[in-house]
Image (cartoon, rainbow, N blue to C red):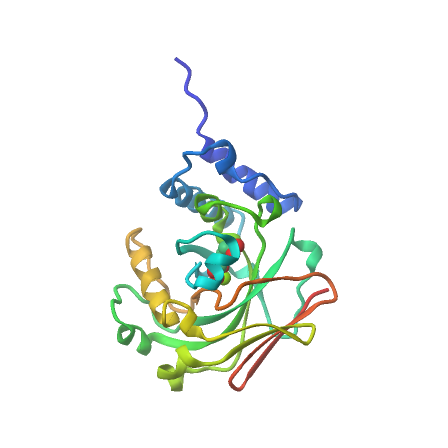
Length: 260
Ligand code: OOG
Ligand code: MG
């Protein structure tokens, strides 16, 4: 009896290779149709271990597919979570180099930075005293799969297409009740390409944080002080290429990302 090699190990290798070589791979569910969500999170956990072993540091977490617009965007109708590493952060004024990604996309989100750790929170009021920053952010996605096409387990294994994030500086901490209603406008090269409000994300992006806290707790993990959480795209994402610029407009905030 010969033991067949565990395919999940090869999935981690293939994802790391796609990230490094910038060559997209076929979605695993094509050849491994029984790929389960549980196995997919196992692949993601191994990918995180690999990243930590190569010196990356965890910067926080992200929720994905928490709005209808995003679910329709990628034709996957369940919310997902992943992790962020500090090398993914783009700071205001820095550019996104398109040639370091396979097929980058950008989307507007509400980000939360925690000043204190968050273990068991079950209500929004359990979170508020721990928040240091809550405001606009742009997430940069880059699926490692061909044509940006995947099934639910594929995108989970691929750390939910995580590739970068840019945090704004306008802090809405003093107007928490208004957050669901803050008008959100996405512009590409000056043209409005998306409009919405954070209410698109589960009614309130902080509900997305509560969902994340629950998922992390199930794995004996928690949000640590200083970590960032991306709560999920408010509108569909947009593809970007060199020479593009993206602007996210929210009340008293303009967040600009130039692509080179
Ligand atoms: C999957 C990641 C989804 C979000 O905010 O909904 C996500 C993808 O769209 O590639 O980050
Ligand atoms: Mg996102």
